Length: 383
Image 1 (cartoon, one colour):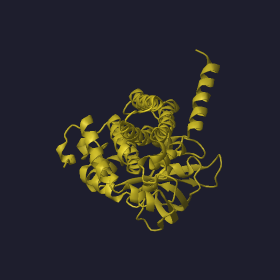
Image 2 (cartoon, rainbow, N blue to C red):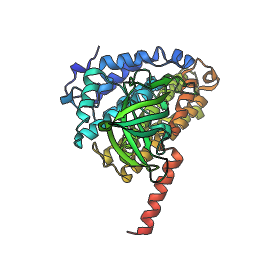
Image 3 (cartoon, rainbow, N blue to C red):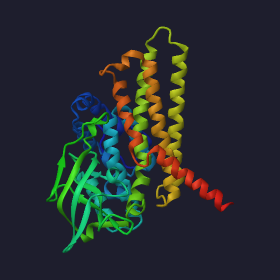
Image 4 (tube, helix red, strand yellow):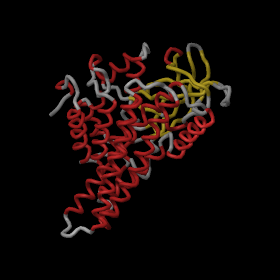
């Protein structure tokens, strides 16, 4: 079996191999986790064993030194085998990319976080999709720091995470308020997980609620601030790094559905020309969506500027990936026919899992508004 110690310079084939290792393990348990809405523990045990969760950590800090593009390759491959495992891992992997970005920008605490990921197997979760730019969790100044109170939703991989990357508003919510960003240990007094995750799809991610009840946050643990209601600062950096990784996970689900549709079609003595054409359309959609994600990452680079232009680039690619992923899975059901209507079909699960893609911020509609606003501003300002 492959282990992270076997790698010196990670290759694309290595990234694929790691994803396949995890996916083969995960696939055996996915149906049960989907049925019972339980966490993909087996997949995470394999991720820890083979080093999948340490991929983006620089080699000098104990990781595999994967590029962002290689993380996308791995996440798409894993998504084709186990959608919930890929999406859950995406939440940790993008936060690891954020810490790598911060480390390269000189953040003093980032190296320690990256070393913990590599050496201790620290898993990081996020509440970024919960209350987005307007957090409802409050921060009240106390001696040495802040008291946090509130509730966060959509905290994927909560059962195994050690730290939650989260935010809280200091003072009454409104235009003049300041939002604090920090990592809060899930073992801290006053933190508890409420098992709320019973959903249409992606049921194995265990994206439960996390409640803060008088949780103490030391002042020196605040990693940044931003204005209330504004996508800026640490949240902007997080959004930029999440978009391509999350898009790749959903694209993988669609590719897995396309593969299953092709398998079913190949077993027919005389496939209908319309079904063959539809399979070709699915393949084309997948390729163009993959090109969009990888081109966006190449355009912004490994150390992207934390600005609106970067956000627009990666969000446009994510929008294309999740919208096309949904279309591909729908087409796969048409190719497969009635067999896909059975709960035992992997296409039925893919149909539900891929529905989660458009809910992640920025939503497809919000992305179009962002792109349109930028185009309008460019038109007004002129050449």
